[in-house]
Length: 158
Image (cartoon, rainbow, N blue to C red):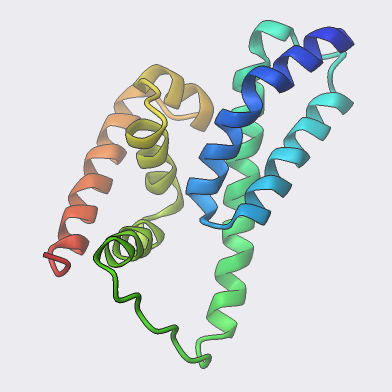
């Protein structure tokens, strides 16, 4: 990959990667850091990466980075269980967003990522299989299970 191809890839992919990272992490600083880290990794490995496959490479790296960060955050969260819970927002849209965020956070990492990739980013099963290393059938099964779990978790919101 040449420098101009790298610059073109950054220009083309940065918004999509940031949006995915933000929805996955719900924290803008973490999303910015994750996207910056994957672009740095692409820069360091650009001689080995083909320009045509750079988007998939970046999304795979970002997904793995976010999963690692989530695992780290989960350990920290468990250590801080004694901290007082934040008050719920009074406005209905904030409550819905909060309920959805909490429900997504309760899903296993892989299922949460699939829901975000499919329902929020609009990727097809083949692309999601490539990003996550699953087969298309596994993507379908995990996505079905995730949606079923989300429906159950959000029943209390109604």
